[in-house]
Amino acid sequence: MKKDLIQIQDLSTAEIDHLIDVANDIIARPQAYQERCLHKKLATLFYEPSTRTRLSFESAMWDLGGTVIGFSEASSSSAAKGESVADTARTVECFADIIAMRHPKEGAPFVASQAVNIPVINAGDGGHHHPTQTLTDLLTISRERGRLDNLVIGCCGDLKFGRTVHSLISAMSRYQNVRFVLISPPELRIPEPIRVEVLEKQGIPYQEVTSIEEAIADLDILYMTRVQRERFFNEADYIRLKDYYILTPDKLKVAKPDLSILHPLPRVNEISTEVDKDPRAAYFRQVKNGKFIRMALIMKLLEV
Ligand code: NCD
Image 1 (cartoon, rainbow, N blue to C red):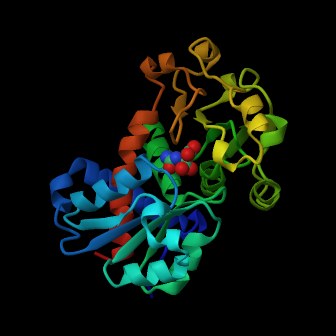
Image 2 (image 1 turned 135 degrees about the horizontal axis):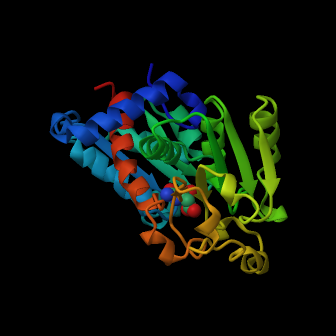
């Protein structure tokens, strides 16, 4: 049976750990993988803007010896003429072996996955999930820290609409002795289904705070996020909240010397560029990791 990746829960912990092992092996021995997807084609169907996710998927496939087709905006596809996601997916299935789809509507990649017999990867659906960013984040945490357990993880910013945080919390909750500090303005708190179904039901310790300053000294990981302008109903609310958090070298003075600062990017104002020089800033290493874990995932789903 074909396998899709719609949400991070579609992978077992053993499967995630294996993908991380494969990604580390690709980093160590890239030549060994350069023909693994010969004659295979990836379709990237992006109905929403993207830089890292789309380009890392495409680079991943090229580096495996495969090829890539796709579109990077809905307006250049037949979606602009009113075609359904299911019909577009069935069309693409005639040409490609695997699909990566990003869509502003929650559930669209799931709908596509039900319509076709090739694997579909969710590359971000609205404010819902972003499982391949989470795989990237887990690879980064394990490379930076040497472990995925025994960590205090601070998630800061737009925890309401930020899909990467939703998937990250679901994934990290599976590891032993992980504690979350959720840092957000009251309006952008983590949604109730994640607070109740993921954290409370599993007895994962967490606290909710509104300022970085009161949390930072305790953290092993600080996961910054952008305020998701495109998901706001009202521009005035976005303007009021967009600069709520700005991480600066000054705020980092009391942080642990081995803190890891992650961000799925793009950054707007929430991390001052002066922080980039700090060795604890891992976000551009995180971008690089994204290609390797996507290579591992494509191989797994194509069973090569
Ligand atoms: C994130 C996304 O698209 O959700 N970006 C990414 O894929 N690296 C985060 C964001 O857009 O803020």
